[in-house]
Length: 471
Image 1: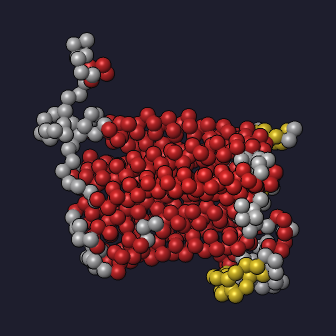
Image 2 (image 1 turned 120 degrees about the horizontal axis):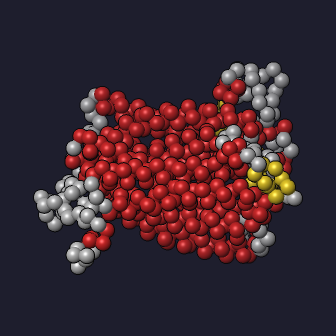
Image 3 (image 1 turned 135 degrees about the horizontal axis):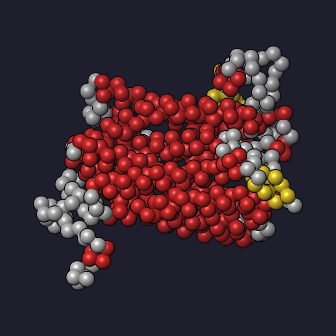
């Protein structure tokens, strides 16, 4: 299809499906923690606004969680169908790490999710809050195992190759590989930022439509506080992640910077914009700031780091893609910092909830966190090319032996199916957001039909069923 090889189609298919699986779990991670905070604040302050916000966002969380689970099922199968040689080579490491996610995070989430979503009037407030916190912890554990596996592919250690197969010799080294702490912190923080922008955009949109109430205001206020605190933190984490990448994957950094060669005695400029030309081995039409890249990456105005020409052409990543996805991520990150500071200034002026350009900007920035997250993911994954396990196994050696026709058909099926299924799910989730929070949800321990009468709680499991209370 379109003159692409089976390898290129397999990579596109994996990139397409994993893009969906990144978006929904990211919102799940952020919303789970947000719901835990809302319920803790409600138990502490007894303010019904927190309770009503909890009920509102828990519905959206449930829909998003379901789509995240469905999108994740496909990923596991693709390792066997499209990347069978990779699975055979490195499955002794990636397989157990993914299994640990199921045995810890998935079971924890599954055990408490039902209580969290359906137990509001069936269990005590403390137990329900515990269930929400456990689900939030489960999402974090899930991210930990997934990123440990992915980080090992970028900075592999703790293994030996025996008879052409990877064999783990030190699991602590495998899990806590050099890039893992930075990648985990960067990804989780991105999930929190994405959720804060999503929640804040919902609040701003309702205020612009005249739906001004305490719940909408609290929603916007909490989101802006989160953005103010986390956006600058993400900049600092990203800086440290970049330094770690320079140490272990210098070709990726050179591609991100569009840096082709060093000039003796001169620092490396920061290229703001331009167009990397791989054939000519130069970045055309560039706008740059002298020595700033050296200052950021080496902490010296004259410092130098490996350039693209220091690597053989077959060992370089696709420069133009990595160059621009990195700038999309950084550019949106700067806009997030701007929004957080603007919100703080308007709060100080007592105008946070006034209609105007600020609320429109907050609304437009709603998807910015997810776009930046995807751009960052593309930067790090495409920047790893041509390796599937950095320095150990090339991507061309990992793909299954399917024909281009087979990969074309399956890719088309995936595109049509995903757009239909997740399009409907996303539309429904956005309709829930557009409906807005409603006041007057019953407290735990009261029946929905009669908010003043205590809800019956069975003393024994079987006594919950009608007709079995006498047993």
